[in-house]
Image 1: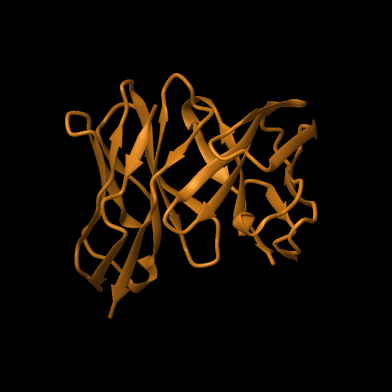
Image 2: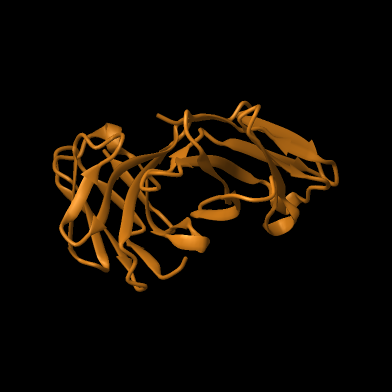
Length: 113
Length: 114
């Protein structure tokens, strides 16, 4: 997966608790993304980052925050988890130029009970 | 804004038969187009992409897609499928001027039967 590691791979948490998902990359890519995958919706962009401390909102950012204090790490935080945030979360990086494209991590399956 | 429509949520097909997975997009500007495959309990893997040049794009595992600008389509084809092609397939688009946001269709589940 082009050096992208997501942790944890699976998590069950209770409604109202904060949760942080981590994405780690080893290839110094500038752009990083968080998507969520839900049946019938495909993948939807939550937040993305274009550099250290530079982030922006995606299509479904409500209830989520992100941080990027180092190039290699992009954290997604659910401030107060709700059942509607039960989903599979994917981190991705993009490569520019002739090899332009996105590469995805293996995903984190989050269940909020 | 851009959008992607995958017209079929499920496509059942017998092994060794040809298959076409349909993808249409909407955009007022030029776009880059992608097909990704997701095997059960795995992440997304790039099958192929169209950035420019020849409108017929060949990808991995014997898949190909044709970009049709006039019909705003990017259909995925394989002449003979295998059981191992059973997976979910996603079409995605990004505008050429702002490649920060890859927009996905809702996916097509390809089920190959023996």
